[in-house]
Image (cartoon, rainbow over all chains, first blue to last red; front, side, top):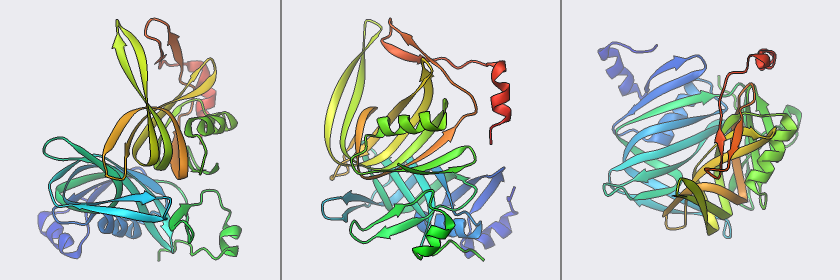
Length: 174
Length: 155
C-alpha cells in the first residue's frame, strides 16, 4: 500500500503523482479534480514500467473530448463537451508507441439527463475523481504508425528481431 | 488475426472485413480456450445488434442492422462451451459519427479497419446448456474436480 500521510500526499500532488495501491500485479489508482486523464495515466505507466496491459475506470469528467475515426478519410472527427459527464464505461489498453507507453481508451459518458455519448477518448478533465483499475501484462506490446490510415496499429506477436529490423523504437524506461 | 500470449491473457488484432465472432471462435478452438472473458476496442463497418424481448418467459430476438463506421465504446464478452464447442456471449455499445450511442447483444460485426481484443482465458471449461423453454443457452458454472490437473498446468 502506498497510502502516505496527508502532508506527503499534498507534496505528491504538487509533484503530479497519483495515489495508488498495488494488489499482486494489478494497480488501483485515484485521479483527482483537474487532472488530465490521458497525461496522468501515461505518466503513471512510465513511472511503473508498464508497457502492456489494460484498464477499467469509473468516475466523472467536467470536460471531455471524444474522437470518432473516419476510415474513408483517415482522420479523427472531434467533439468537446464542456459539461459534467458521468463515466458509464471507460475501457483502455496499454502498448508502446515511439518508445513510450500509450493508452488507447474508449468510453461512454452520460449527461444529467442520462443521455449517453460514446467514442474514442481524446482528452478528459477529471471532476471530482476517477477510479482506475490497471492490469499490466508481463511483457511489451507495440504499436506501429501506419501513414496511410493514420492509425497507430497494434502489433501483437511480432518477434524482437522483426521489431528491430523494421526499426521500431522499443519501450525503454530507465 | 494476429495475436500474442501473455500468461493467461491473449492480445489480438482483427483486421478489415473480419467477422468478430467467427474469427474469435476459430482462435478459441485453435488455442483450446473453453472459458474466459474479453474486452475489445476498435471500429466496425457493419454491426448487427440483438435485443431480446421476453414474451411469455421466452426470448424473442430482434435484430437492428447498423451501417458503420461505428466506434466500439465498450465490447465485453464471455466464453463458454455449448456441446464442447466454444461460444461467445458479448454485449456492445457503439458510437456513431455524431457520438450517439447504440447498445445491445452482439449478433455479428464486421471489423473495419481494426479491432483490438484482450482475452483473459480461464483455466477450465465453463458450460452452457440449451433451454428450449427460454430459447437461450444458459450459463451453468459448476465445480469439476476432475479438471484439477488442467488447472495445475495453467500458466
